Image (cartoon, rainbow over all chains, first blue to last red; front, side, top):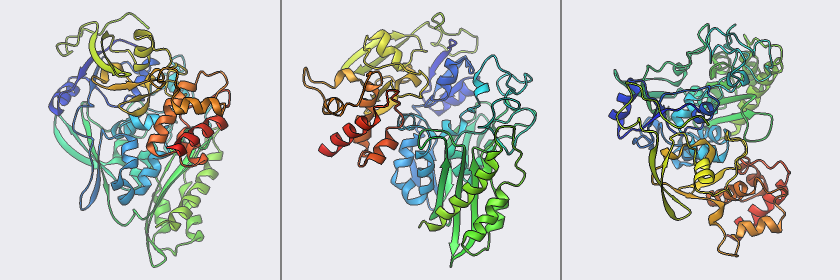
Length: 325
Length: 172
């Protein structure tokens, strides 16, 4: 691990000043410390933000509001989550291990780096780690990689389960920085790799995620997160689908869907949502949504199975969501 | 690990350029004050600085669970967090559990159910099991398997581990 300066932020102003001057925020540290040890990450200045008052989980009339420093386990176990948005608890508990969920913050979960093995191999080309060096995954071992949103420069999937659920639910982020406060959809946090895969998110330098706002209402009751993986727990998704339905009189009024494990960013399935809107609740509509989910999928040499797996996972997640509530 | 030290760039805030940082933590009920390199993990602090080698280093990347300890009562991977981030925290390791010759109930249950062969993962399994029971996630074998999945046992002693955790959870 490379040496670094360490600073404990006393308050938000202190943190933002350090962030604006080039300090790197650390919360749970479960991704960052691991990558620092591998020397994939080499921050010169760490700013510990764990003392900031951003850990509350609370309900307002319109939103479930989650402080960015709340731990995954705290959010999953909070009665407000269970009552207002149980799919979030499901997505959180399907991720990582109990120990990691006690450590990892919500903001950090959204900012975690990719799990592509070549990203971690300092002697392999990787455009994310070393821009312009190439992508070892495109012609390498790529069974775990993306089929949607890929480019000739990067095919790594985004690893967060939580982000998939939040994107499906139209959650927003409130961030603060030197230029003040702004709010935007979680979906807009993530950048497609294009020809700049080293630029992963839309935060300005020094901006701090303060809280996540999840809309309450019609999509909470019939919502499930289904994660398919190589073992039954403690593993990243091969394919996952967050499915939320607004059902009225056995009709799907509207649907919200997003997929993980298949996209270079958490992947909203808008064509599937359109296929479901206004349809009678049932397997026919679910099948149409599954078919729509895989439109535009471009498999690599090793991950062709993900196309069919995404179609089936979409159908199964919708069946589960249709039965809840 | 490379030479101890922190960067001394012009932009760095005052007070961060020293080669070491003072930390104070309570480990197994005892207040410990140390001067440490900010890169030191809690795991390395326990093993290398305090001589508490009961906590094991397996993967050193948060995948195996051998380094599980309780931090302020909650189970965590000691390899993936810096000691300097935990001023004033309370850490509990395997060395704290037995009372003299009397084993902690979960230690005794691991022996009774043969919850190990080589024993390397065992301190982490036991600390994780204590966390699992305290969280209320040990009410059935399936639930125990899911909530203990952050601890890998390469000897495959899982049936004994699940039985031991389940028994202690039932005994309350």
